[in-house]
Length: 196
Image (cartoon, helix red, strand yellow):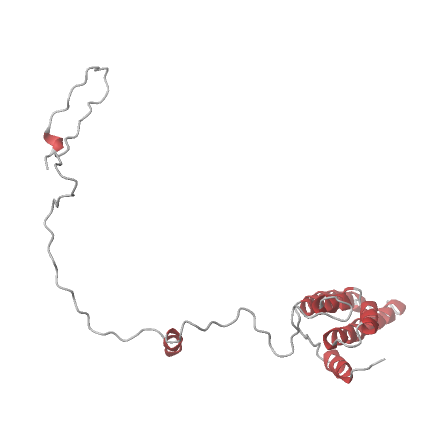
């Protein structure tokens, strides 16, 4: 291969002050096959000593599992309702559970009468009646005695709002979200079957 840097620049027909251009020279290729420019040496394969794995033991056991089995993307825990379960009115059970909380204790009463057979909807309807009903009674007491219970009404309003959002989201996800005291009582009533 020639060194093109040592060659003087070729002059073009039109010298207007541009930088000189170099014309590269390519070797004549007589065949279609590429020719080796540099000699290739063969190197013997290197053998590395076996190394201890730096992965923890539980990761190594996961690597050794067969690739044919994959865990499903969503596995419901015990007690959750299927996202495709329908009620007797044709509505999704998760939507009915959300609507139990949407209108406070009134929504719970309505869905307790509409869906007496679906345990998921019945549980959320009873819990809605117990939670929002008791908070409504406490709000009413705070309204009667505003000076004696100053500030309690605001705290109850905040608890009502946060509980409303949390319970609606849990019901729409298909979860049996039990409140500390009222949830156990609602579960007992929902398991009885016929409340009315």
